Length: 258
Image 1 (cartoon, one colour):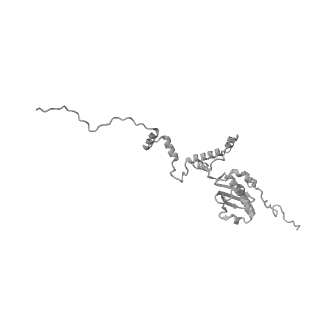
Image 2 (tube, one colour):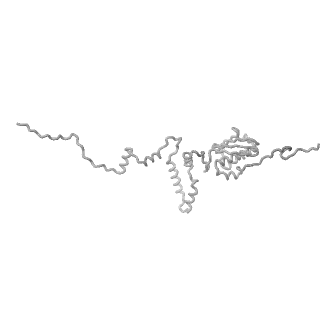
Image 3 (cartoon, helix red, strand yellow):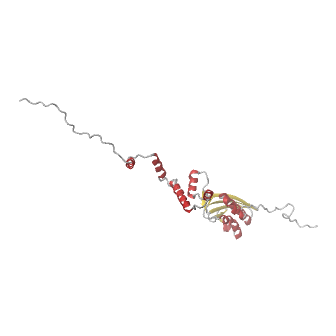
C-alpha cells in the first residue's frame, strides 16, 4: 500500500517558560532588610554612620560627637530628677546657672577643635585657668619677672636656684607664696622667676607682686581674693638717694669751726 504522509506538526519546545508570576508582596520590614543586604542606604542613615563612626586618628580626634549628646542627656536627667515642681523660680535659677553647669570636657573640646587660636586652659576647683601666664613686679630697687605654667609646684629663681636657698628667712618665703594660698593654687603651677636689684626683702616683695599679677592674668576671677591680701597693690615707696654735699639723704656732715 501507499505510505501515509502525515502533516508537519510543530515540535514541542524543549524548555518551557513559566508563566508570569504575580509580584511578590513584601512587608516594610522585609523591604528594608533586603535594601540593607543590597547595600542601599538613605542619606539620613549615611549621616548617622559618619557621626557615630570612630575617628581615624585617636591623637587628633579623641572624642566622638555622640559623647556630647550623652553628656547633655545625663545633665538633663540629673536636673529633672533633682528639680522640684513646686518651685516657681525654677526656670530663673536654671537660666542664671547656665555657665556654671557647662561640662568641662565639652567646653575644652569645643575650644580645642573650634577655637585653636585661643590659649590653652584647664579647670581647677570649678574655675578656668590659663596654662601659662606671666607678670612683672617691683619693690624698692628690685624687679622681678615671673612665669607660671601648669605643673606640680616647682619654684625656681634665676635659673636653677631654689626658693629656700634664695630666701633663707621664712617671712620672705611667706610673702612669695601668699598669692598661691589666697587663690588655692598651691602645687598647681610651676613658677620660674628672674629677679635683679635690691636686697632679699625687696626681691621677695617684687616676686610676690609678679606672681600675683601672673595669677590674675591666668584667672581674672581671683581678683578679689588677691586684693584681700593686698597682693596686687604695688608698693611704690623708694629709698631717698644720697644728696650731693650731704653725708646721706638727710644727714649732713659734722660741722667744724676750723
